[in-house]
Image (cartoon, rainbow, N blue to C red; front, side, top):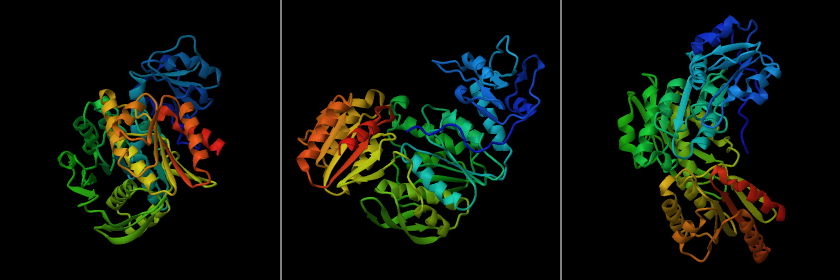
Length: 465
């Protein structure tokens, strides 16, 4: 399920002088490489001749321990915070390797002043909106798009290192797990257009409240080019606070009451259609994504694209050709069964949105949900509230699996909701359900936070169908 963190495309090489200039480091014992460096990387397993290995330090690891290993693999350049003795390779010594990675990404970004960069953040929908926007822009010109979950203070500079002269656009997803992170990453990417999709309850435990989440995400507006455009949600609970954070003259809002909005929305089992209204005119859209929340994501993608002068016609074509990311509402048909793989991640907002999509499906509707993480002290209350809301939907069964399953079922207070401690217990129940309802059509939704690995339970069930 994990997206590769290393690019398969040849990257722009670095000279020894560029590495030193970008990081403000020094070459230990004046030993510096004469050949160009083909790439900078942080994964010691992939380091080879021609690479520069950057040794990161975390709370529980120190990649300086692997420097001798990468030298043995043929890697002749390392970027370190402390020189490693008795090592006959070039060592660029910097004050802080994490910040050095940021400086390298920033250096690469500054080499392309004509690049149009779009940066987005939000509590949910970031990945799907990024994919929609990537679909619009990559039809028109080479576009760098954030891969997988490379959206934090390490992932963002790693993506910037992949910039090449042919890129005309970059779509950067920025995540926040603490105050100051988006301030840091948006300063690195220097966007012409940036904005927030929504303020939900993802990472609630780490921030301690939605106001703090709004404050952290609003940092994205600080680094937009003066002549650039701020994108804002028109109908979010925090729209007034978001608008107050905007610093550019130009702004474009999306959603109900906004500059870019949808009417005549029709939701289908695996798609949606609507009339798109924009300052550039109106158009009909056949969106290959299910759910009202994905209509919202499409409106956001449209606003971002219009802000850099993309035509409405190109926006519509790009939206209609967009494909979802792996583990994001992917539909799998198998005999008389439909399995919806939405296992990539979860927060309370996206869990409710996915459940709404399940209600649109055929036959017996079964929701299988794992725990939602990163809610801190609110975990039990959030799962209880989620159960209460799910019980109101026309679902035939709700199966909650994990530590907070009992809280979800307590909130639901309904006979069709069941709690399981383990996936094995839930699987047994699912197999019995399938046998009970033979030969009826059944639709299953699997969703949970990344660490719950709900895709494993889905694969186990598929084997039995």
